Image (cartoon, rainbow, N blue to C red; front, side, top):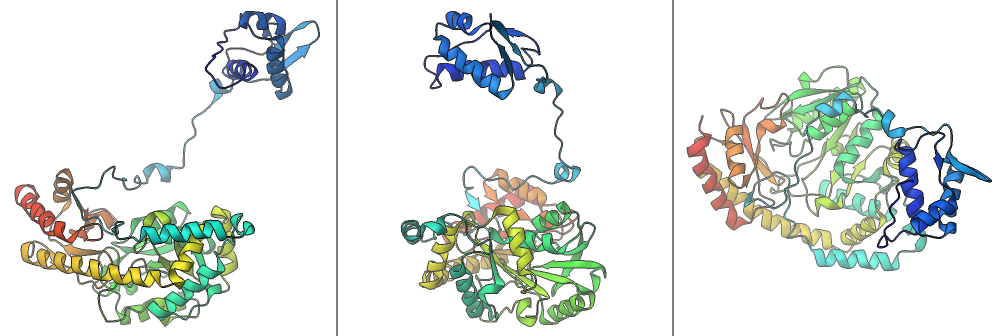
Length: 471
């Protein structure tokens, strides 16, 4: 007799339980082509259920092609049903994905001292205001806008982003030049998808931000690391055949210094000669701690040689995944199509809330508070590093962002490992070089660190250095 176990507490009906258990037995190879099943009456008597329950299960399997039911004859497993599980072969990704490092760990609990670069203080975020804006949008948004949004993003948000870029970065941008993305990484990915062919070479900073370099490789392009000095990317060392250049000129990641004007002009001239495109990632310079302007490359070349990429992750919340790109009109149709094929569009409610936050001045107020708070933390951090680590670390001058970098004469990775074991989370400069550990130093983020914790955290790091970190 067929081994079927019906469970009274199971929320599924008798017919569904019978159907699923027989189906699993067939697909798993326990019942084979041509095997007979008991009649509906016989199986119903054995299971103490109605004949209709068994009959319904048999009918569903017959409709699905698993059973051949005949009048006055046993039902049989239909010829041609294969033993799927026994013939399955493992699915293996392309070798690139196996070799790629795992994404950064999401820490289950915040470390005692969190010096990670690029991590903002989520406690400062005006959550009450944001929740109010979200609720208002959910209750007032017309039904047609709750279906699918324009893949380029909401018109009101693109307009507010254009206004913001004009005020804060002096960019001459129209709303039609803006495309809303799920963070800055998607913006870089979209640009790469519409511009790069397999085999194209891409210049990236070395040291630099790893995800774009890895993403270019995943698309079949060949990233080429180009040295960075005190003025930024060394333009003379960019290979002539590069199709695209990815840079962080306002606040080079991870070193932190801005690209000099001379180097910016050299880069633009190089791109024009080679008919190459520059992707400018302006990832965190809303947080600027100097009166000196940090003009984007885009402001020097508004005619389309530069695709400008920005993000709200560092000043709002990373989990909101709200970013944007600015591109010339001739690229926008292709970028919109690529965005549509990727995810159809960025969630509308969050876009509408951000548009209101920008238009009503909430964003500007929040940014002023961040400048005050982060500026105090940054100043304290720099003072202590100069005082207590000046013999081993040399600070790289920077004027923006959520971290500072210090160079060292030797490998800092043993110190980083010991610090993490002791509850201090920070990065080595070697984490961002290709090959790894090609340069030595440490990154100190201050976004997630309260001012009162910075001094005690650095004191503990100095103790660890004396115990374990010295060469």
